Length: 435
Image 1 (cartoon, one colour):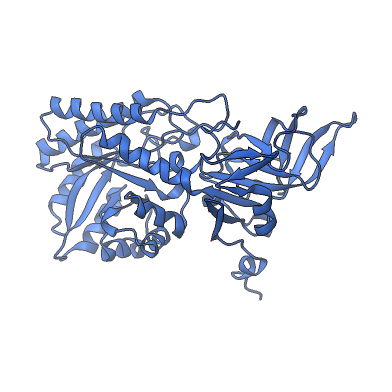
Image 2: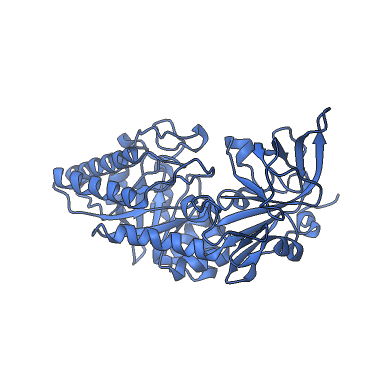
């Protein structure tokens, strides 16, 4: 029995082999090669619907925007649009994918701390719902760009709320020293520039304190800070906050002993904090927008690798398994010391042996996907499946050592559809210009 808080909803073991979405993992690897990323459509859709349902039950105006940085393909953006979610993008190319997928531009928030003029021009020309402004310099550029427009461009101000998230420091983004967000003392200057800009329309405030968050109290505190700042903007500058976003970042477990956050408690905590603090400041309730990414896509994705070789100790025990992927398709273990759960997809029912490490093919000592994982004694040709591999893997993938990036398939009801083809050596070399 697979623990479905870390494996896709449809993942099962049949005759000792892993099945996802009614598809046999070994058959998928044979058809598409490895490394291969397999995404379960049912898990994706259920996660999106669960967010909508949890916030709908709170009885507040709300929005759920999928955070594209976790993973974005045209097919995934199409699912987002079909399920009625909005989308958060952070580059011109992500915005292009959203348009290609048919995501309504009004349902898009465009984030970023160093966007080019061309990216901002595209966002304005295409009518994105909100440009989320991170710096006074960018606010000035946006004001210049939108001057004279008949239809003002909506914007939100991202602030650094000064709340320390209990997470890895590389994915903590809400403290005062973070690279992201305006310091609260800069809001007065921002408000004055917005009031003087006919081409801009103030929509509200945004913050994001980090990723892999399991502490709901700190998320509630983020809402409290944003409401306090909204009250200050109204009192000092007459600006009305129509939308308030505490960002996303809700954590996803990757080990069987970990517990998934309670989505109902998450929605209730944010909503209760918003109601309480808006009442205290006599503010009308704004639209509450959350931005889940990892918690929608991580568990839906399984990475498949072929075991290529082993490193044996003097006593004949296996110290390392070598697989045909690694840090170029999943940087998280090397960057964040992220931990994962794995099994042998072709021998999933076999008893486990002593703990081993699973290392990738890349020329870095840090290229170790799993440490001290208990698997059946493996041999070259076995198929390794890594759970909760959907988020920040392919989206951060590289061509290190000039190795092409993996393919991705979407599975449902026994059918696999290619949603990202495997990169070829010709693709990798296409940018390389000889003398």
